Length: 256
Image (tube, rainbow, N blue to C red):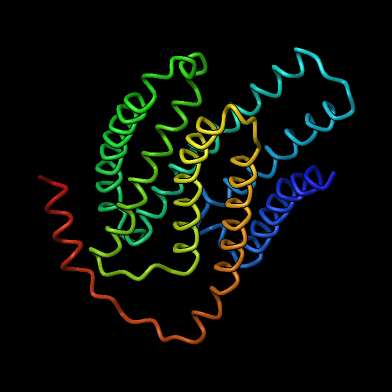
């Protein structure tokens, strides 16, 4: 009973907080600065509502092959949508320092798209080599594709931090919080999958519990960094950053 209540809390509480983060972003007009991230929050909450509704139907004893198939398909489409939006968020964070330079932003977007494609291919090769011996995994390849894309997102997140470091731009609190949260989500899913394989014979739900706990901490982090945004701006004098040299150099590299 206690385990069931804990599981429900870890599943419900983060998604309620997701809605709080979205509402706070609306109140402070952050949804205009981070439109893709805001869309991701709304998508996650709506996906939770659908999956939770299906779960309650199963709990009530009204289960059938059709309902199970609907749940699995909803879960897979939800995962695909979440992954696609997370790629969009990382691109959004990458372009944030150049949002006032439309021409350079378009050039860097093309370069980032190429880098993303390369990272996806490399991650796919890595996952294929890691799981080639476990033929059972290949009967459900969408989850392996999901792992590959998550690994690629980890690499893309590193590029986001390197990019800000290269330009000498300090991340705004929301950008930093979003980046760290995206990194934890993308990194922990492959780890959870590996842990499930290791503990497969024990039939434990420990990996799922850990994954939901990580997601809970991530959402709390997003809420914190959105809340401290105004305080950070009011207590610090923003320095005027001279980015002309860096932007000119980046433009030269992109044109090569």
